[in-house]
Amino acid sequence: MSDSVPLRDRYLAFIDEIVQSTLKGKISSQEQVYRMLLKDISPGTGEVFELALSERLDALHRQAEAETDELKKAKTTRSLRAIKTIQSQWQRWQEQNKATEALSQAIKEITKAEQPLSALLRVIDPNRKYPLSLQQLVQVAKGLQQENVTSLQEIAEGLTRGISAWQGLQDDLVSWMYEQNRGPLGFEGVPEQRGPWALWAKKVNSNLLQALFRTLARDESAIEFAEQQRAITLSDWVELAVVLQWLQRGLVNWFDQQAYNVEAGSKLSISTFLTFAVIWSQLAGGFGSIAAMYGDACSQVMLQILRTFSQRQYFPLYGGIFASFSGSYLRNALDYLDEPLRQVEGTQEKARILTLLGYSQRALGQYERANTFHQQALEIARNAGDKACEIANFNHLSRTCVAQTNYSEAINYSQRALILSRQTGDRLGEANALANLGYSEVMQAQQMQVLEAEVYEMAINYLQQGLKLSEQLGDVQSRALCFSSLGISYIVINQPQNAIKYLEEGFRIAQVSGDWYLQGLNLSNLAEAYYNLANFEKAVYIGGLGMYFLHQIGSREWRKPAGLLTILQGQMGAEMFQKAWENNRPKIISFIGVDGYDYLPQLLEEYKQSM
Image (tube, rainbow, N blue to C red; front, side, top):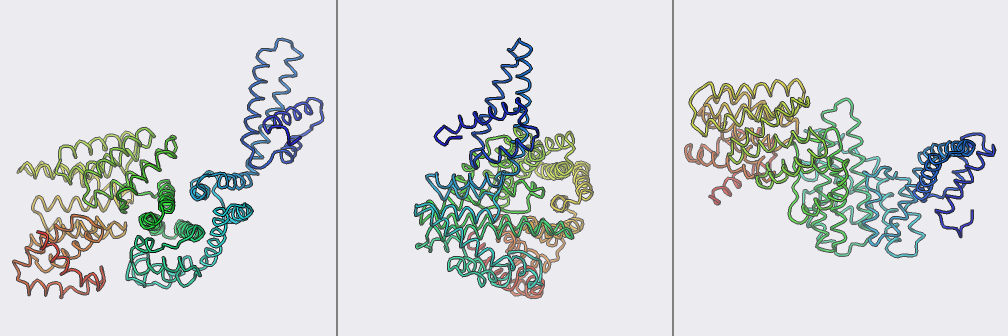
């Protein structure tokens, strides 16, 4: 076919040639058609060929319907069969050549874009239908190197350096875990002694990567790190992006494959997704002050991570993690989600991300913002037909209303969650709805100063049902919530001994789920229960832990245990109060380390100064 003929016309002529050859008996097999497609369809032009094929098919259908002459009708029918053979072999061609097609399209997308960096990030997005492999990324770099455009060559250089750096880190992707045999695995802990950052800093040659990893190893702000990188080049940023993205994906893949301990594996995968999302969020803040292009690109990567995360089976619709995004970056995040998630398959992802953000805002004490997120998520989930997410947001709205002491509305939301969960067979949603209904009714009865024991018994029965169901399901997050709610309810009805039993178990299970908010909440309420039993020393020790846990995640609720500790200090006297902490020093250090223990008096003083 001549290159001077427009591509559409070339492909129409090519399709006609195959049809005519079939009618003349020159094509004897589907394999022959496939070889012709391989020879004559150029990479990156599949969409044009598909449109041409569709055009010919439609024309033949109309011709077959209008034809009255039997001989001509038979010829048209044979032509249709030939077109359908081309269709079937075209589908085969697409499957066999999707990698080549994706690669060609990726290079074209970057080279033709007004903003090549943004286009690059779209190209390497793991949420694409055909995500690029590392080898394809090498080919993208080679393709861009051939372009006589400075920015494209810088991107190519960054890709090449990033791939090389990642390959040098692969052997140490998880080796740091085996060296850290003390305590739970994860990214938190004593600075420069836990997590992978310090080890990775020794394994890379890039000054930028070394500096970032050392910053993270010292538990310092990635925002301040990024603000200091005034001399960063486009190739530097691309190298950093490639390394961070492949590290995150490599860790998640490894954790997801830990079949011997699925619960621990999913917990660490969750931690990895959120850790890297937060890092990118902080980098967006810092780099944004240098160049908007880099700040926007960081936000783009952050949202890609969250979109991937939202599609995982273990995505925690009922909490367990915190995503703290603020100001313009949160608004940009939601704006960025709008366009790719307008289609039906995408709205579910957006609803789930909003659910996560809403839960996070409630944990931080931002109740109005939490309500806004959950209402948006509820509407999107309903339109997308994501019943589990819809039920989860009814449950979250119920919990947020309790925090705002709007108990009648909390009961309303929990009842709606209960009805819908039973209609759809969502047993996890049902367990949470029962817990929320019972908890809301206990709190409403207390507010209305109800004295009848039957009212509380009925509400606690809902809580017990929720606990039993969550135990049957083996869902640790829901069990932790049920135990916590039961403990608080028994405090309300002045049964502190029963409360302690449930709160201690709730704390233990919240540790398993990794939910710092529920851990802090249980400790705070445990301290109150021990105070009611006049066990002041235990109330001091546990109250200090609860205060620290809640303060660490930025929750306003740290002030509740701080207030109780202030009362205890006044009743016990400063010397006895301090002795209570000293007597329990080993226990406290086992949870929050020496630095955490030393920070407790300072934190309590901070509370007093703010009163």
